[in-house]
Image 1 (cartoon, rainbow, N blue to C red):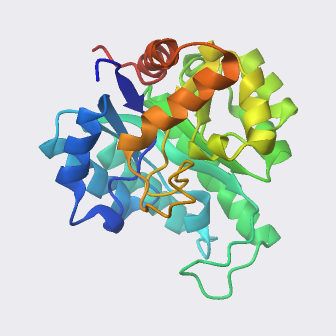
Image 2: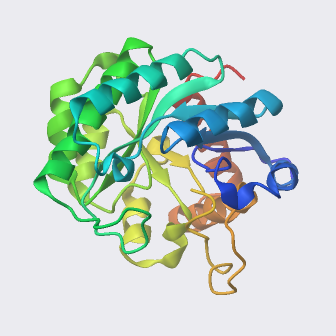
Image 3: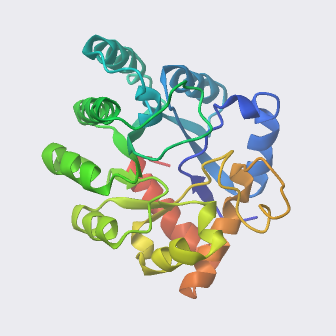
Amino acid sequence: MNTTFIDTHCHLNFKRFNKTREQIIGESHNKGVAIFIVPGTDLFSSLKAIEIAKQDNSTYVAIGIHPHHTFNKEASNTMENDIHELEKLIIHPKVIAVGEIGLDKHMYEDTKYENYQISEEFLNAQKEYCIAQIQLAKKYKKALILHNRETKKEIIEILDKEWDEDVRFRTVFHCCEPDEGLLAYAQEHDIYIGVDGDVTYGGEKATFVKKVPLAMLVLETDSPFLLPEPLKTQKLYPNTPANIHIIAQYIADLKGITMEEVAEVTTRNAKRLFGLKL
């Protein structure tokens, strides 16, 4: 396959891939994936991503603490320690972004945390972590990968306060919710929109992505999650970066253009987003 892709969001650092990681990287290369961006969701997975990147030239890293993992971390000294640890990692040459960070009010049933609930204290902890990590990204001039689920109002309030011209064209709404307000904000601030396998499920997400200019899109698999169709119906889990061409082809069909054009433009967008000189 001559077409080249960048998977801007794949969790190759998750234990789901511990026994198959090298094989999956090889298969993905054969399907045209030239670069993998592997985001952390906590300190352990951020460090794991760096370890993978040390072994694989095509892998780059985002470090960060996902809002889900700020549960029971209301104490400010805990956050200070976590940010201090992230700052130790951010100087590694393979770290090109801070992420996956943000806000999330979704009530997850599948979670490792006991008594998980969306309280005011929890949301405040999420906000504090999000702000501190945005400031870390600005300090070290890294890109931002933003997770936002059911928190449009809150995430926009934070971005309005923390916005800096240095993060224009250097920020992405990961797996962006199909929301016209978010799209308008992204257009105004030159924020990229991450598109994952759920676009192939049709419905609101497909309608939304059809409206997003190609110049704003980057491709993500969110592996091992969000398996695209028809693989989801066939239950061919887990999702891997090798499936990114399915997402690209679906977008091409939505927009009435070629997959090669989708690959070319989204790859160019990803290089600008992450400052990749390839």
